[in-house]
Length: 133
Image (spheres, rainbow, N blue to C red):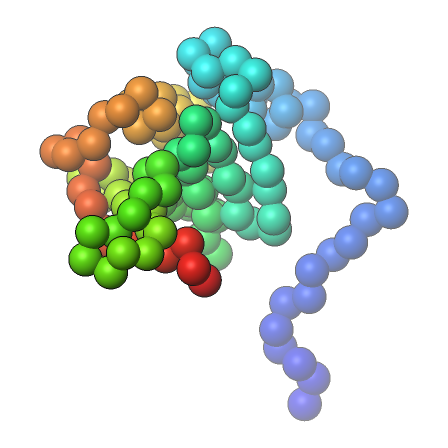
């Protein structure tokens, strides 16, 4: 029986959709306007990392096309264990982001709030990520 798992497609060149690229630029314009050259973006497969001033927002696309986001605070020392750790938050309102204009605007708004220092009750602490791993 053949392997039923999907296999990723690879392309010899970068594939860019002009419409999607334009929509991404429009949707993320407020991020760049607020944080400028201090904002960084990297991608690894279906995971995108947005970072600003030691904080990160990790957006992961799910199999159904929606995305979830983890909001990771600036690293610090955990007072209980004495090891380096970062607090991890989720949006308090259970939110999955879809590739629609309104949903992209909501995600960018949440990112701006997080990078600007907003935490509880807008975001809910969900755990800590060890820096030792």
